[in-house]
Length: 279
Image 1 (cartoon, one colour):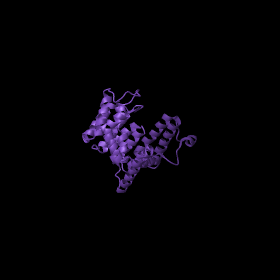
Image 2 (cartoon, one colour):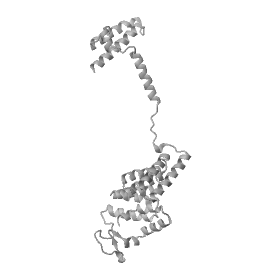
Image 3 (spheres, helix red, strand yellow):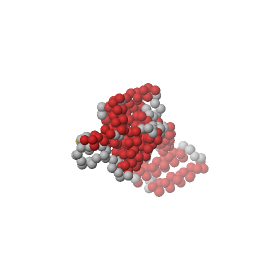
Image 4 (cartoon, one colour):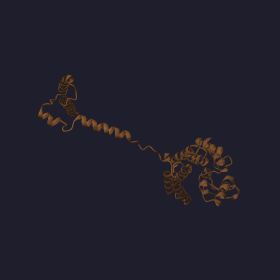
């Protein structure tokens, strides 16, 4: 470090000598520069006239003025370059981007129906990259993340969906499901309530809300003892923890089953219902 300081000091004395020789300053100020050279030389232990030190410390043929000029031009160039801070969802998609993104979404939906969730996530991600302003793409990817037990990521996507469209009930539904699966029952209750605020006639969400409330208050949501192997109500057999009698008598589940028969994509809604996790 000391050698670098000496080299810098030597460069300063060289510049001041050039200023004197090239008349950068008036005659009345040359004496002041000579005094400055002497003071710098004594302070840093250098001798600008010593040939050996010139070989060690001199920066010629360049000089401080040219170095400073390079610095100024570099600084100006940086100032003129705007950083690329544009986020995916900040970019305004073209009509072609929107069309291609929707195709990716459809392909993702097909993979969801096939339960190929990793492939669905990839396709929804590609749709988002093309059009980051569509809440549906984030909500769909949230569903795929939840099916892959990546509930934290599902929450992130669901929050993004409702940020884009605060009136999108399915975004809150995805959020509630992921929160429920992570045991965040109080948060799930609030999210389910938000869904019903936007979609008050949703019987499935009403059922899910009751389950979340029961969990939040420490109540039991199972209709039979987990360790019981006896027959369920109506003589229907229990297979493990699955009570078929309760399942058949649950209007919300039956409604979803009927909907699923009419629309295969409704399978995702059925699989996302917390009621199934507690049967």
